[in-house]
Length: 222
Image (tube, rainbow, N blue to C red; front, side, top):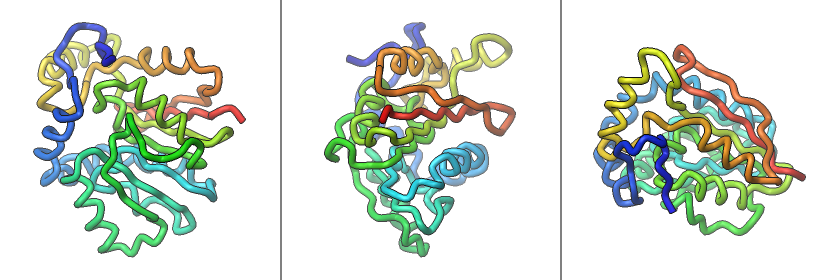
C-alpha cells in the first residue's frame, strides 16, 4: 500500500504509470536540468561503494549520469522503470567506453527480477522521492543485497522549518507532474530502518549544493 509520503495529504505520485509518464517528459532535458545540481550527490554515492569489488546495483540509473564516475574495476548493473531515460543511459555507455557497466535493464525497482543476495552493494541516487511506495523499494533493495553489503541512498528530505517549507508545500501539490515528492520526510526512511533487524544506519551527511541533498549509508547485517 502506498503511503502518504509527506504526511500532509498533499498531491503525490500514486502508481508506476505516473512515474514513467513524468520521466518520459523529463528525458530529453534531464541532463541539462540536473547534471550540475546533482553531481555532488552522485559522486558521494559512488565514492561510498568505490571499494566494492563485486557486483553493484544502480537503482534508478536514469540517463546514466553517475556511470562514468565508477572505477574501471567496478561491475555495475543499472535498472530504471522509464525506458526513455534508460535509452539515454545506453547511448552514454556506447559512447564510453564504460567497460565496468555490465548491463542495463528496464525494471520496476519495487519488484526486481534478481534473486536474493545478487549484489554486494546498491546505490539509489534520487529515487526515494520518485517511487509511490518507498518501503517496497527499500525491501527489494535489501533483498537483493547480500548480508554484509552496503546500501547507499542520496535524496532531498523535506525541510522541517525555514523558508523552504512553503515552497516545498506548493511543489508538493504538483508532485505527480514533477515526478518526485519535494516534501518527503526523513522519518519515512527512519521508520523503515527501525522496522528492520537486518539493516542498520551507518551515517547520513549533507552534500552540496548548500546541503540540499543527504547521503545515507546503510549496512545489511552479515
